[in-house]
Amino acid sequence: MSTTVTPTTAPLPEAATGAAPTRGRGVGTRLHGLLGAVPTGVLWILVLLWTLPSLGLFVSSFRSETAVKTTGWWTVVTDPQLTLESYRGVFSSSTSDAPDMWQHFMNSAAIAIPATVIPIAIAAFAAYAFAWMDFPGRHWLFVATVAMLAVPFQMSLIPLLQLYVNGAHLTVFGETFTLLPDLDLQGTITAVWLTHIGFGLPLAIFLLHNYMASLPRDVFEAARIDGADHPTIFWRLVIPLSVPALAAFAIFQFLWVWNDYLVARTFLSIGSTDAPMTVRLATLSGSRGQDWHLLTAAAFVSIAVPLAVFFALQRYFVRGLLAGSVKG
Image 1: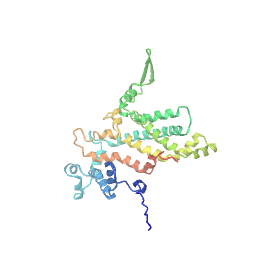
Image 2 (image 1 turned 30 degrees about the horizontal axis):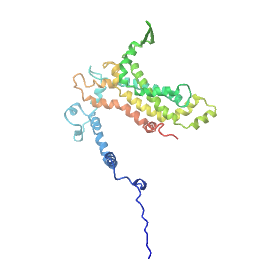
Image 3 (image 1 turned 90 degrees about the vertical axis):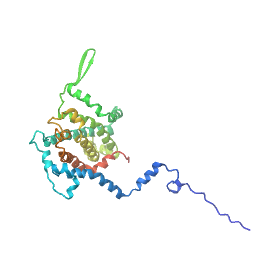
Image 4 (image 1 turned 135 degrees about the vertical axis):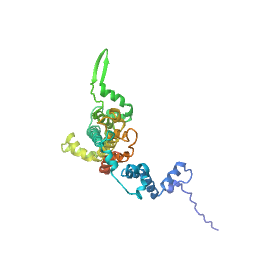
């Protein structure tokens, strides 16, 4: 009499079979799976709903004052009467309450362009030095630079204002030493873009350093073998290879400066002829709020340049944001 023995196989754990665990799943895991199962079409619907307010603002900017104040923007479907009245009002200077937006538009450009170009120029040199040059205290200087990212600029505006107006002085044993003379920058555009430059430099150095440090070392070694010095390597190799990071920071810095209100309001008065568009927009509706319909047109005037900058440089945006995130 023979006995047949059938071998038994113990069930493999779920991790070994590659199947997702079904037991012990937390609420967060279930919620993540639920969100991941949302169809793409539903997400596009949410995107369209999110853009409806902007669409309404854009349509209202081409409607007459009476239409804006009496009917909803969606009535343009049945009454498609469009006009440039609001845009003419924004750029008009025929009345004392008119914004004269061209002047403030140029003021915004005069602030944003230097406050974007100068930090990039300075940060590129500093980032290259931190990444590829060996000098005493390099690591400590870099740590101190990155630490300045944690300084809230809102807390520094009043001390900076006092510095621009009164200078900096140190009194030791009855003797007063002038560390920084009175620059008399209150109420000037220079004070605004100097502030933006100072607070933009730490982020620029950090971003560019991460990108430049990730560049292949073999390229630099080959350049040195060919007799290239640091200035040659910087201008011929590093700058062309760092265009994505430079463009990414340019987008960040330009959008921040162009849309800034707090810094400009601190150093410039509302009635100043040097005020940027953001300061002028705050009082655009008139002394009694009677011209609030002009805000629809002024909003798109103010975002025209940032949109152009973003779309012109957007192909470098993601590459710049990922700068230095992957080695090798």
